[in-house]
Image 1 (cartoon, rainbow, N blue to C red):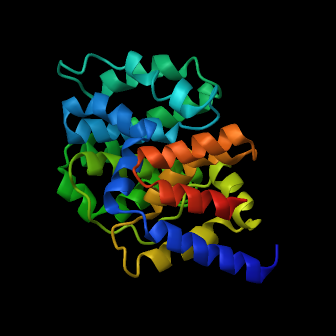
Image 2 (image 1 turned 60 degrees about the vertical axis):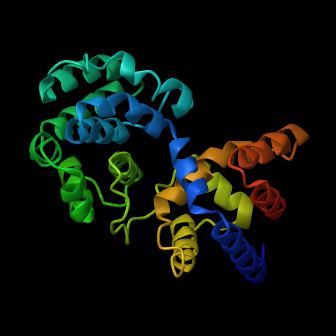
Image 3 (image 1 turned 135 degrees about the vertical axis):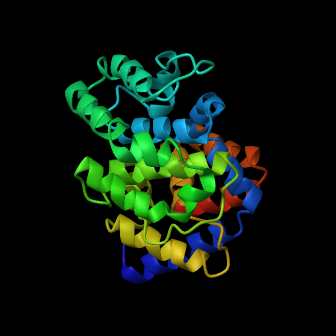
Length: 268
């Protein structure tokens, strides 16, 4: 695909995404399995709930199947009774039972212990209010990378920070600085981007898209884009009529069917 065609497709994509209203973006995030998960955990309050979200986000890789089927819905079955007093050790011991039966369980158990027994989890996040976390969000991102001994742009680190972002949205803390945080590149993001443009510079591509959108749509973040891509990517793998119907139904449910038609046509 030529550079001119790529640029034209990017411009058309930006126009399509620009026309998605704020309420639809909010609904897209609420469709995420992590949002459904936090609706279960949030009863214990922002701090402890955010710790659980980050801990499980860090281990959201190498799964037995789709995350929305085999990961997020299963974890609540292992959590301690959230109607009683809980602490870091209870959370660790409960999640340990879950990860012992997961793929790459040894690595995941080490990651679980490393994070939950860090000062970032047991003190900073556990005892913080939403506005305190949002005000130092990017500092926490960097600290998390340090705790885990990984680079800040590592997919699992960025995804865990997205889980913290969802925790803040759940607490109605919606406006804070995410500039510099990159899209968490997984198979769905890479497949979608290649389908759209053939471009393998996934991070640069979506940074460019976001920068253009944010010139006038300040509330759209890289995590909003990630949520949309992650949800619709499985619907475009084959140009079958059944896929098209499911793809368009997704946008009809969001009450933006015209966006679905335009995006489908752009992807062909």
